[in-house]
Image 1 (tube, rainbow, N blue to C red):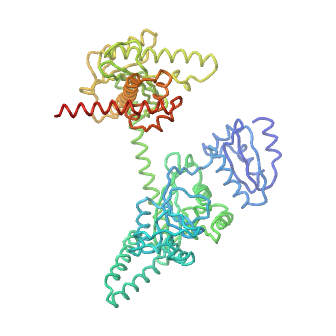
Image 2: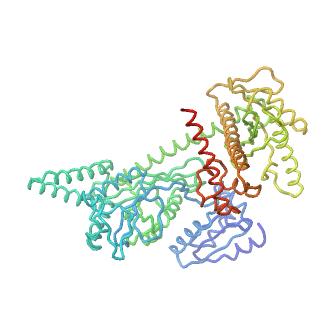
Image 3: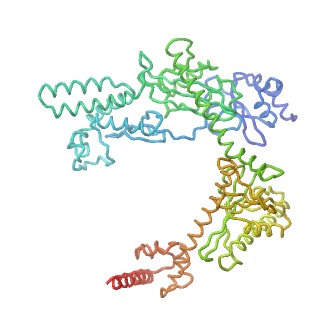
Length: 631
């Protein structure tokens, strides 16, 4: 601990506030405290009682800042805002990489629509959800649009402009506000019923539809009665998929948390109108060592906002600290009172137990996924290391392939795996420069030689500048090389490596039996067809093949375009280069209009017309020749 840090700790105030732990000027942790002096000193004076995560954090801290506030609620709000802003490494962070679907209704519009969206925003609209899938949302929207005569179009209504009513008006599924058939006040009355329905209260809709169906039947208007019958069936269909779990109804979120590896999982079950409408699992990274009550508090602070409004009641699996301050903050976001409680018995306790059951199931599935992912990557690499007799674990593997068409436009590809996962940004391709014709052996020798020479030169340069060679384009040398092919290709690659005095292990993968070919070994290795190591090198080989072919095709298309451009009068090297850059293929140029060709830099209207006419003339001559031949 430095003298400056010690001095800061000794002069901490007895006041509530937030503290920001720093390492090399970067904020790595944000916390709140009722008493900053007592709380911050604990980090540095009671290290034996800390969790491993906290000890690791404290070892990195070389400075901290504090922000004083008036009370616990202000500290809670400030902590939440600072965590969202800085996303410190050692804080509990809600990992939300999914964009769950919502239903959006903007009642500020004169004639609102009901839409599916995956993003919430501070735009004054009401958002219902999140839902588990877009299918659930679309079913709900179908029911809404079937039951309520609201518009589904995107027409801009206003300024006195009227439109002709569409077919939805003719079949009674829209009141046609675009044609002035309903005013704004009447339309908003319908939308209020829509909002009530989306909030989970379907009883008024059921009662109204049932009454209208009976009235239509009594008046012998059976066609109209059938319409109401179908609408009532649609409501029943979507509502029967939602399990009734609270006898007294109500809106609740049920939260439960469990550990999963280094992370913590929070299961949230959403109950609206006494029915469970969705259940989600969220991961909070590096939070396994945190107390469950702190995990739940952090989740609620980050999950609930003005857009994702908290319900009236939140049931939790563990009693949270500073519950009063937390409820005050959530109540402010909702605009009404919110309660957070840990039920001990009854239906609410059963809900929490159900959430815990779901959380444990999600944790089990996640651990299996992690295990399977490890078997596909790290486990496969360990098996490959043993199969090839390597001395060390191969962190970086590179795969190579050659692609050409009868020796023309020959291309070599280099694809990379780091720790068993594709590193797409490290992929490279090589235009073959020294080999004439279809000679895969000489081509692979050139590619390996150029790649390793680039790597050695760049590595030496970066080391002389004090830079990490791993971050360069070529200076991170492979620890294992895969050659797509048999012994001939492998020996050509080995010759390039040996010429540079390197000892990087290499092997080939022959396609016929998917056999591994090793240098100096007459017998090939045949791995079990279910082997993770075999699957890994097959993925690497196939990726090298795909990358080589895709680039070869682009070169072939550009070459065809270039050769045709040579025939067009008035198109010199400069204009040819500009056209190649803009259109890339002959098909794209032939499909372009004169105006599109003219947009190419350096191409005048007259030249564009000449190119257009020339291409059409050539195509016309071909067509005539084909017709006469057929005759």
